[in-house]
Image (tube, rainbow, N blue to C red; front, side, top):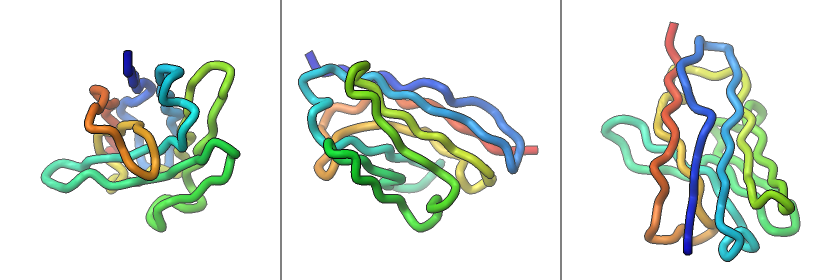
Length: 114
């Protein structure tokens, strides 16, 4: 059974940090994994991805501030977000990369506001 469960979102002030987690079912975790986000009124975009071998890459808007990592033993992928900005406000989702599945979890809401 495919399962993606995101957690760790919340309200944070500009400049603050959050760490998101995504627990994925083992059947899909062997793939590359990505974090995606959807801001209000906008399309869902890729934020960061990590391949099964550990290579990573980031959207330009978050490079240097966000770090993606994975724990293969726990089937979990993380997104450490530092120096958060109001424009980072969005619902964050994880999914496979480079081609996300049709199935999406509920996501976790990140709100950056003073």
